[in-house]
Image (cartoon, rainbow, N blue to C red):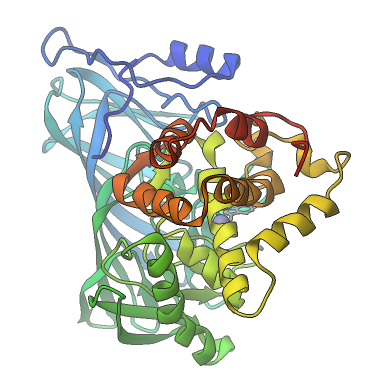
Length: 472
Ligand code: TRP
Ligand code: ZN
């Protein structure tokens, strides 16, 4: 569910849009709920990833049941996608990379389906309108997705015989059929059946852990809206730790952490989780979810990911690594971008959180950190080659323009509007778009509203021009 999807329903328009470098604005006029059934579109219209996502429906819930065979690395799975059609659909698509599809049912009736590229195209026995459920039975050995920058994501097999999903931006389609766009957030249930020697981490709350013979089924439930790239399962030979923490507002939050055995107990890192969550609550507002924790595994991907509720780390996390991934729970997970070119709304904010932590723990102030970076990167530095909110190359999604320049933008904003207004903006951004999406334009308008200032030039110079802003 979440904000309405764009209802263009036209792949041709999406391609046009991708070529022009613009992104699809949600069209105001929704297609009439009645009328002749037509196919859904096969692109969500993102300029960086035009092949990803689909239109014609809005996913409400994913119900994933997956059985993992440790000896072969294969899965057999059923995912039930409950969605609301935005117009009567004669046909619709889901994203799925690799895996073998055995059957598709729509509202209980077998449907026809075909595969091409990373699309599973479903033709229901009768057109669907309103709420419907597509149930996909599938299996095989999941593939790892390779990003434009060459990094691995999606399904990652691990040396302990398990596998972990880290799926930003597109890897979710390597383990379940989905509408693979951050615009279409949904709730999730994941029931994962593994040999009992493996433990299973997931998002949200653990509903049950049931042993049957030599195997155990872990049921994780995510009641908050979640983008597909943040959905995670991690199966491994873990030490599992459960405790409870008190949030700043007095809520009791379960803390579930999963630490690969080779790393010992990681007690210091685990003890930091409640401290970091409370530190960030005091600055960003109430923790947006119902549980927290960390997953630490030897993934070999070279990065961590802010998987919802429970960030996943490739090896023992650093203090700033924890600060960064937990900050994403507010900025990235609860408030999610609508288009990938707005990635600075995630990475700039999480990087700025690192500076806030450093400043509060004996390090330089955020102002001093800003000045040092500004000086360290003269106009000729490649840091300035990319405009954070306007880059065109998907291989640069995780470049320093998003992280460093994005974070610097927030310090510039803070100095312009003053510290109290700045934190009001951060908190209001998290509150207003909680469980939803946001754009750079909406953030700018909020900052202008709170500060009463015209911030057009500031946002333009820092986010939309591939050059070093002068005069700082
Ligand atoms: N979003 C992650 C973080 O900042 C980083 C990340 C995800 C990443 N996927 C990636 C970095 C691929 C490089 C390549 O914590
Ligand atoms: Zn990040």
